[in-house]
Image 1: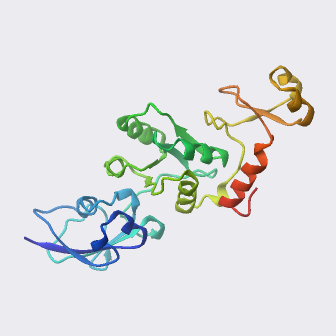
Image 2 (image 1 turned 30 degrees about the horizontal axis):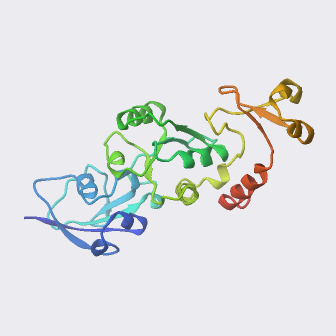
Length: 248
């Protein structure tokens, strides 16, 4: 049976068993598979890949394996302009637009708090996520590797941590978020952009102490939620500074 020699670099080793991490190893194959098939058969989603080299030459996912090939696979943060291996979704000037699966609700809240466009619904099934992803050109965040391996998923990230704050730091590093943060501008419930509103217009909705101590308010035009800089605001500011020390 023909074999290829393959090595994964940096964070791609997260997906490998201990005996294959950080080393070149031999892998047998049948027929004439693509390098994408090989990479994903080893547990690494194509969305995590930034550069593929076969025998020291850049190749894309359609490259067909040859016996004795030496394959090197690098993560997305090491993408090269001349690399045809991956295709990224267009990022607007206001930052990336995300789509989260139903296991990442707290992460969705954190990203919205930082000002990012985040679509999150608990009733989406995998087929729904893929359909929305392609229709709206968003970036899929999930812990489901198999979902990211679908051919129609162009851009996505497999969240490693189970802790929401650590998840946010992961995503921030992957998509270079600190310079794109515009905190406290989106509704944490429904993702709509907040609008300023006069205090007098919502007096009937406020508690006496809120009326007494706060004068600046915003409202969500979609779900009608009212926001102000209450006692939680300082804690949220500290959290923003943790993610992006130059912001706050």
